[in-house]
Image (tube, rainbow, N blue to C red):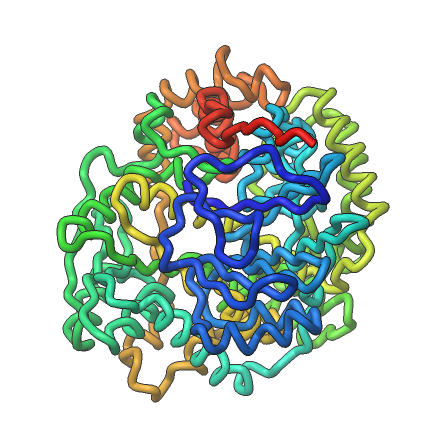
Amino acid sequence: MRWSAGWYGGSRHDRLPRNGRPVPELGAAWTSGWPAGRVHTAGCGPLALAVVGDCGADDQQLARALEWVRAKDWRALTRWPGSYLTVARSGATLAVIGDLAGQHPVYWRTETAGTWWSTSAGALAALDGAPVDPAALAAHLALGQPDVLGQRSLFRTVRRVPTGHLLLIGPEQAAAVPYEPAEYQPVHLRDAAATVRAALAEAVAVRLDGRPVSADLAGLDSTALACLAARSGPVAAVTFADERLRDDDLAYAVRTAAAVPNLHHRTVRARPQCVYYAGLDDVSALPATDAPNAYVVTASIKRAVLDAVAGQQARGVHFTGAAGDAVLSAPSSYLADLLRTRQYRRAFRHARTHARLRHTSAWAVLRRARPASRTDLPGTWRQLAAVLRQAPREWVPQAQHPVAWTPLLATADWMSPDVRGQLADALNNAAGHSAGAPRLLAAWAGRQDLARLGADTAGWREMALAGHSTEIAAPFLDNEVIRACLTVPADERGAPDRYKPLMGAAFTGMGVLPDFVLSRVTKGGFNALAYAGLTRHAPVLADLLGASSRLVAAGLASQAPVAGLLARAAAGQPTAQGALHLAVAAEVWLRQREAEDARSWWEVRARAAA
């Protein structure tokens, strides 16, 4: 697994990351698993800077950036294309800055002699065998928003840096401080289009460094990345195809490959085992990740694509459109913001179009959005705490619940009363420490979606590296792409009368994407493979979340609801698929944690005698 770590303290550290490579010029900082070509530094002594990952800054730019380090202008160090970790030292101050999407998370723990920081929470937990924090894991399962509990990580004694914050360490203390505004100054969609186009083009270009290039060629988002990459050279474009999906991804992919030079297309025909939940009977065969990872559910499908890529090229970079939906569009929950800001006519117009798409009435759509318009983030958390102290709810599809700043997922109703009470206490505490929360629901929900997607994509990257030596590139999760897109208000990005209007505004007439791609209004889905996997692998799932389940033992799940869910799936009825995905990923992760050997992470050295 790739990770970075460092020590800040008045005395010498007594540990070294096993297989760690020192970061030049930074002293007590190391990378593990990162190629030397992905680690760049500038400066030395009291003024030093390092970037780890895919960063578009060259040596001269990094050297000039030392002035930003001297001035402690930390946000300026996050504006280069790419996705990377930044570590900067200015005198006695050390800043450790992750990205906006959680692909490079930052954690820390303070000891008497100093502070350890790392991009791996598990590595810091292994320092003394810190256990999993059940309330934090309950929040992960029940809420699905990484920042709800702020600085609590999934491990006791290990703290996390929330989204949009950096870790600032000095002689007196270590603290997470914000560097990104909670909300951006709005920019009209037409005015933002050129910035979005440039940011996305630079995000793709920074990964084109001579390695073989492949890309998904399916929906609008992945197609845009494939076409951008093809402007610079050959791209092995792959489309996963299964007749059960009943989508038009393959038809559009074939047509696109015929129209765009340098796109060499290959269809990946689904094998019988390419369904959700395949391969979970042996969790040891899945690469370990630092946090529960949703891609363990779809690992067989991802492997089929990567097998096709690896058969054409070795040690390449593979582009995916992950998170394109999150930045280029917006869910209809933005209607709550229109109501909150008293834009009633605009809210009704949008609700009417949403209603037509859902075969309901505009008033029904607005009634669902209205409760969220009358509360704020801390108020929502207090309401959720009260609900958790009551009896579990009967399951209904999430789309039938009112819009909420933080939706309560079905997994919350699978938990024991004690765990529900712990989570309620944690939510009440979080509500009392929510200073700086955004004013608009869309701003909060958008950041949380990206943080969740970024963490999952980081896990997928580990799987691709371990099994196929392939680097996963997800440009829609880059800082500058996120900023360019999210400055456009949610009601413009998610306008229901146009499909991803921001993409159309950015690329129409630019000669990058064929017109028929930009005019596409359909989107593929994997529901058929999810239900096929549920029915085919129901016995494995029942065993995984049965009597021997670690989640059940911890009170984080119970057998009866899972059995009921599997029975409904077998009968072809709607089920809480998202909740099941979270539970399965968490169960796999807990079992993998048991197999982890702490000594595989850290090497202990004797302290030098004074």
